[in-house]
Every structure is written in C-alpha cells, then in structure tokens.
Length: 102
Image (cartoon, rainbow, N blue to C red; front, side, top):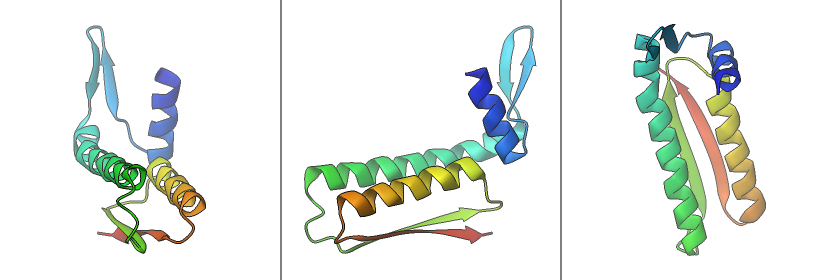
C-alpha cells in the first residue's frame, strides 16, 4: 500500500497523507481530491453495469467529461484504459473522455 501511495503522490505532485505515531491522516489536498476520484470511479462503475446488463443495445456514444483543475496521471491513465476496453468490447459504441481545465 505504501509503495502505491508513494507512486500516486509522485504522479500527482501532492502529499496526500501525513504520518504520525497514531497513523496516517489525509491532507487538505487529499480531502479536495477524494470527491473527484470518487465521482470518476462511480461513473465507471455505472458504465460497467450498463454494458454488462445489455442495456447498451441502443447506446451509440459514450462521452465522459471530467472537470479537473489539473491533469493527474493515474486518473487520466485509468480512464483512457477503460475507454480502450470499451472500444474493444463494444466496437459499435463510440467512447471518448474529455478532460476540461477548470
């Protein structure tokens, strides 16, 4: 876990947690980032459910807009990988992600 956390912090250029004798505590940056990450993960889960349920039969286009104050590597990479997987599994659906700068 600590290696993954260190890598994420390095990619984001942020310190997300502070360590004390009692454990790890989120920084203000982590508290700010959490709702954004949670929203992206929830959207991806909803999309996965739609595609797995077969409700996508009339679906022609998927566009995911992410409003970000900065571009963070891991989320962009995960979303890009997910879009690639959707395109591979469902070639008739146009899937794209748009990262908007706030």
